Image 1 (cartoon, helix red, strand yellow):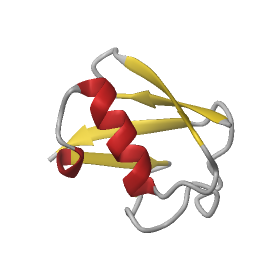
Image 2: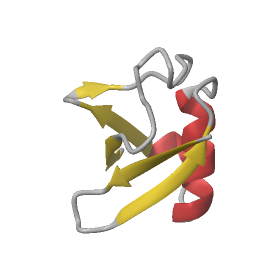
Image 3: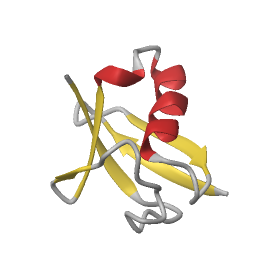
Length: 73
């Protein structure tokens, strides 16, 4: 079980529990429940690269305590 920190750049940091085998799309669904917004409007970035929904977190080398940047479309 991983705990990933998501920063919305407005000072709000959210910790989300997930698995390394989860896709980015699955992660966005869990995150959207915590944020109260639609998962289709969420864009996640790691190191300036936009994460694609069909790729797993493990493939993006997202591990425990990784920080992701959150943007809205």
